[in-house]
Image (spheres, rainbow, N blue to C red):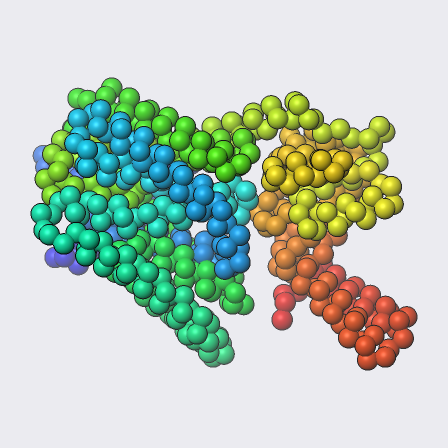
Length: 576
C-alpha cells in the first residue's frame, strides 16, 4: 500500500510538471512560481480538501507533504553540489570579504530588524529574536535557480549573492541552537553550545581533509576504468556522505554538498559530472518547490489575507533596506547592492525548520505558525518578480551614476571597447596606449574603476554584458571589442549583445578552456584565445629556446601549433 502511494504521488507530480509547467511558462510565469502553484493546487490544502467530499479526486492529489519535502531537499543538495563545482578554493577565498563582511552584516541587520517587527506583533523577546533571524535567511534554492537560469551565477550579482548565502548557511548553527534551547528546559546550555560548535567544525574539517587525500584519487581511479556509471556512483556516494556529515554537525546539508562540489572542481571530470546530474537536479528542485506550495493553508489565509499581504510587504521592504545597507557598508557599488537586495528579499526554506521547532516546543501557537509559514511561502513566490525589479533598479542606478561620468568615445570613433578591466584587460589597455589607440573599458568593480579613472584611463562602471551599456560606449563606431570577463556566462552574454548591435564587429575573447572557446566561436567571436593553450605555447617556446633552437625555428613551430589549435576549435574537436 505504501509503495502504491509513492508511485501515485510520483505519477501525479510528473504529469503535472509535464503539462502545467509549460503552460505557466507560456503565460510568462516562471518555473519556480509554477511548481509552487502546482503544490498549492494538488496538495492537502488544495484539491486535497475537495477529495474529502469527492473520492476520485484523491487520485490527482499529493497528500504526504513530509515525503515531498524530503525529496525536494535532495534537489537543493544537487543544486549546491553543482554550484560548488564552479568554485575552486582560491575563488572561494577571494570572496572572504563578501562572505564575512556583507554576509555577516546582512544577517545581523536583517535579524535585528525582523526581531523588532516580531516583538511589535506580540512575540516575546527570545522567541522574537529567533523568529527574526530565521526570517533574515534567504532561499538558496530559489536564488540559485534564478541565477543559473539567467547564467549569472559567476557574474558580480551571483558572486555577491552566493557570498551572503554561504554566510547564512554558517549562521544556521546558532539559530537552530537558540530555537532548541528556547524549547527545552534542560540545564547545561553552555555545554550544549560548545558541543554543537565542535561538531560543526569537526564535520567541515573531516570533509576538507578527506576531500584532499581521498576524494580526488578515488575519482581518478574510477575514471581509469572508463565507466561513467562508476564515476557517477562514487560522486553520489560522496555527495550523500558530505551532506550527511554537515547535517550531523548541525550545519545544512546544502553546505556539505557545496563543499563536495568545490573539492571536485579541480578534477578534469567536473564537466561530465555536471552534465550527468543536471536533469536530476531540475526535477528534484521542482519537487522542493511543490512541497513549499503544499504548505499553504488557504482556509487559514483567506480570512486574514490583508494582514498576511501587509506582513509580506513589510518583510520584503525591511530585508531590501537592510541588505542594501549591508552591501553599501562594504563598498559594493549602488547598482549591484540594489540588485542583490531585491534578489535576497525573500525568506528561505530554513525558516520552515525553525518555525516547526518553535511550534513543537509550544513557543508559538498553531495559528501564528500557519501565518508565518504562509508569509515565508508568499515571499518565495514573489522572488522572480523581485529579481526582475532588481534588474530594472540596477540599470536605473547604473544610468544615474553614468549621468555624472558618462562614457565618451573619441571623436570619429576608431576606439576599442574592452569588457572587464582586471589583469588581462589592463594588459590589453597598456598595449593600446603604447600604440596610441584609444579605448573605453567597462568593469563591475567600483573600487577598480575609481583607481583606473584616477590614473586617467577611460574606464567606467557597468556590466559589459548588457546591451544598453554597449550603446553608451558608442559601439557603432568601435573598431574592435575585447572580452576579458572572468565569468563564462557573462562573456557569452557580452558576445551576444555585441552581435545584436554590431553583426559585423571584430570580437576578440579571452577564455579559460577550449570548450568555452568553441561556444564563443559559435556565438560569433572572431578570435578566441584559450588561456591554457597560450600558456602551453609560451612554455613550449621558452623550453625550445633553452634547448638551443634558433629563434626563427621556435617562432615558426609555435605559430604552427597555435594555428593547429585554432583549427581544432573551429572544427569542434574535443580536448584530449
